[in-house]
Length: 331
Image 1 (spheres, rainbow, N blue to C red):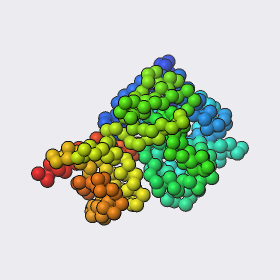
Image 2: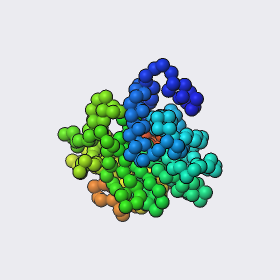
Image 3: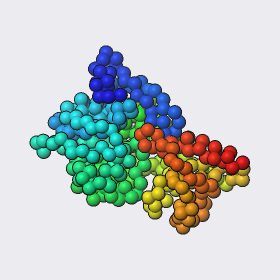
Image 4: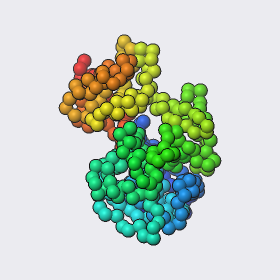
C-alpha cells in the first residue's frame, strides 16, 4: 500500500480501517479498527512525547502494517509535517529534507533499521538528529541499547501490538531516565493474569480488555516484559524463557541466531539453537561458556536464513517447523 491509497482509505466514508497483524506467532490476521480510536492513540503518543503542531514526522516504515499507518495518522491528527522515505533496511541512506524553523523531528523504526543506520557514519549522524526516536516491532538487544545510550535526544522502546493500535507504553533507552520498565500511557491500566501474562485495559484504543501472551512483572504502575508465554520451553521439569536465553547470548556475539524449541522424548520439550551461516560450532562453544547448564541447547542447526516476519521479528512458529523438518531428515 502506498501513501495515496492509505489517505484515500482514511478519508472515505467508512469509520474503520483494515489492518493486519504482524504474524510473529502465526499467520497475519485481518483486523478492522475504528478511525476514532486511531486518532485517540495518535493524540496520546504526541502528548506523551510533547510533540507540537509543525513538528516533523518521518515515515520510513511500510503502510501495510499498523506502525506505518499510525505515523500518518499522528501527522494528520496532530498537524505534524509528514516527510516520507522509501521503506528499507537503510531508511537514512539519502540526505533528508531540512526540518526548518528548529522544529523537532519524530520517527519510528524497527531495530534492524536502527542497527543498520548505526553502521554508516552519515546515516548515524542523521539518526542522532532525530529528537524522538521510537523503536518497536522486535527485541532491542543489549549491544544496540548500549550504542543508543549516548544519543543526545530521546530514544524509546515501544510496547504494543496491532490490537492496541501500535504502542500503549514506552520506556526510555537513553539519558538519566533509561529503564527496563515500561510506563503506560494515560488511561491505560495493566495487571497480571493467573499465568503471569500482562493484561491491558486501554479503552481509548481497544474496546475490550486484552490478555496478552507476554509474561511480565509489575512495579509501581510500570511493567517489564520477560518473554512470551508460548516461548517457554518446558524441558525436564524446568521452564526456560527463550527470550531470556537469547538476551544473555546476544551480549557475547554478533552472529545471527535464534532459539526455538521442539518435542523431545526424554525431556518433553528441548531448546534448539538455529544459526545463520555454515557452522554452529563457534556458537555451541559460546553457549557452553556463558549459558547456565540447564539453558544449553540440546539441538543445534545451521540454516541459510533465520525465519523472520516482514516486519523483522523472529517468526517463532516457522522456526519450530524448520526444526521439525530438519529433525525428520535426520531420522
